[in-house]
Image (tube, rainbow, N blue to C red; front, side, top):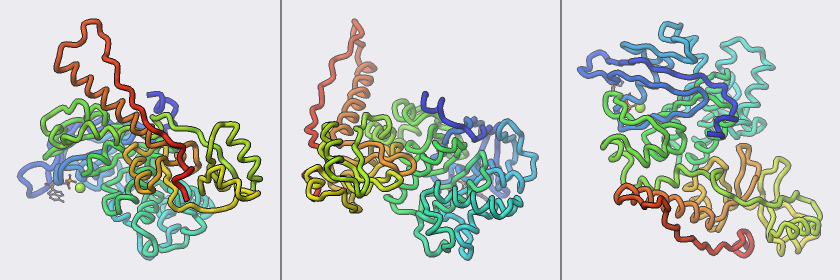
Length: 418
Ligand SMILES: Nc1ncnc2c1ncn2[C@@H]1O[C@H](COP(=O)(O)OP(=O)(O)O)[C@@H](O)[C@H]1O
Ligand SMILES: [Mg+2]
């Protein structure tokens, strides 16, 4: 994919070669014999029913659990005989509860491994500031805070920052977003994707949620009992071509609609927006918008992050662009799934959402009509693929013309705002 081709990769490949884990006292191995190749710089999601061996497999990669048999390679290096403590310093690890030290400040938590590695104070401070910013926490506000004075989602962000502290090529995450509410969960997922795009680490994430797996994983590994590989493929492939009855069952009959969770905002033709800064003369902004044929603009802060989306009529009421933070502004990331984008619009009762990059700066807007058209087109593709399978294909190879979807698409941000 072109997207991966231009992406920076700082991660390392992971290879499992005939790995077995037989816990003492169990008659069957938890992981029977697993071979797995994970490409450097990608996200792989392990998914499967409880007890199928996801956590066991993950912990064998950083040797929190020793394999009974087999070998594990990271970046082509056999790590099975390496000093496990040293190995763990080069592998970030995030668990469900965040695993932060409760009596340590955020900064002290994030700097834990760099301190072990003997970094000097200044370097640790700089790294901590960079990482808190990366995970979406303002360093000035949060560096000295104790974990107990933060929400579950914020603690999880600190957990990710801490895992990345020593710049490890590999990040392992065991159900990291399992304990947060659904909205926070979506935000954390989006942040993780943005971080991955920025850093190009190799990330292995365990989840029991298939939707989360398809959203996050470049590839998804579906396991059944005994660490048995049912399918290891890209999400689209699993959805369209489940390898076994187990996968079919696991994915469920909603597979076609799950397209919503594999299509992302960045895959869709979202529209450009006209931005304005607080204090700018309103007339200049209105001229700019009208020249571009827009009836509304986005007011942004100094980092380009959206604050409100007034219509030109609203702008005309004041000589200068005034400052107002619209807390109901529906905002989605470029990496968000269309499903999440729809949720954001519906939650805000708006016909559109603003699209932001990994750092929260506005890059465009997406209307509900565009989402609907995209889904219709996808579903039409699936149906015609199914028709191709069930009947003889058209002799001349032409496709029936798809019914055009006409969406009444009012300009967002105008009359629906009050
Ligand atoms: N420390 C342990 N000792 C013995 N059996 C274990 C231990 N940890 C996990 N198991 C067993 O190994 C199997 C796989 O567990 P686990 O890897 O935790 O699965 P998952 O993460 O997919 O829910 C289960 O049958 C579980 O009961
Ligand atoms: Mg587990």
